[in-house]
Amino acid sequence: MMAAGPAKAAPVTGRLLLAYHACDVAPCNDPRQHKVYVASSGGGRRFEVVDGWEPYAGSVPDIIRRGDTLYVYTTTQVRRGLRVGDHWLAPEALLLVDEQGNRVQGVDLSAIVVDGALVLYFLEGQVGSDPARCPVGSESCTRRFRMAVEEPGSDGTRFRVRSEPVLEVTIKGQNDSASDPDIFPLWGGGYGLLVSRGMSFDAFVAESPDGPWTARGSQVRQGGGGVPSGIATRWGYWAYVSARDRDTGIDGIRRARFREFGAGIDEASFRWIYPGVWGRASVSSPSIALNQPGSPAKTSP
Image (cartoon, rainbow, N blue to C red; front, top):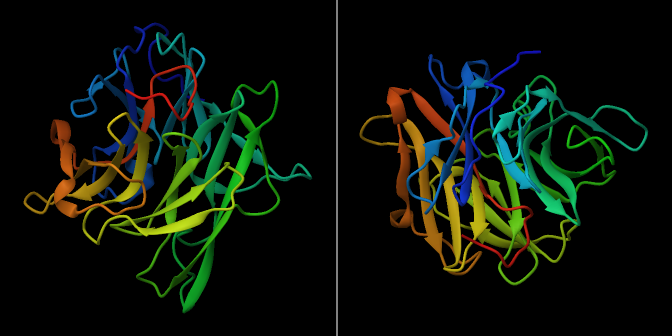
């Protein structure tokens, strides 16, 4: 396994953490060309790659902090930053298993901390085809989102998957999709869930991570952005999305702020965070998290 990054760096001090993948070599729709980055910010608009970070192969990352450890998840690996990132370990294998101990295939991971344990939401994998879409020839299908709870003593490397999905979304035709769940605590209690629907996304609410989830409808019209990630702040809510710059054709990351979760966001509310940064062909799949020991619903930047 690749030993990525230096043994020593410097503690990450920004109030916000952002994980994403970038592409150096076309075609950027090939996950094998993606590399994982972690950045931080004090205010949520300007991000800087964390000190000493060296990118490594991976796609659609997610980041969370628990105690003084940062966890960066991709489909098959987890990388830990000890002492809030001043010592990064090499990526380790991630294992999702069902109640019988059989391996479960999951993609598009999203992590939260519940009662001290890490919990992962993910899209159920689909062998041989895009898990976000229906198999070729199908007029409609159901995309299943599942939940997995950290096994004690594994330090975020092994998770037990609940037997039943926490959410099912019906999609129709080859142009429809559902993917990239993002779960986070809401201000004042409960949880929000964002699900990517191409270049828009849907919102759901629940009292607990187990659900049941209630739909709040489409958050933003087509063209606003997809692959969403959200946080609660004192001001309201922030959503970070992947989008394509119409002028340059380069993928980047945009942010929108909105007061009421599920009320909808106008496309004009989005502002660029990473528009083709460093000349790379693509910067995509943001994961935003608070740089604090846990993820209580009433704390914010």
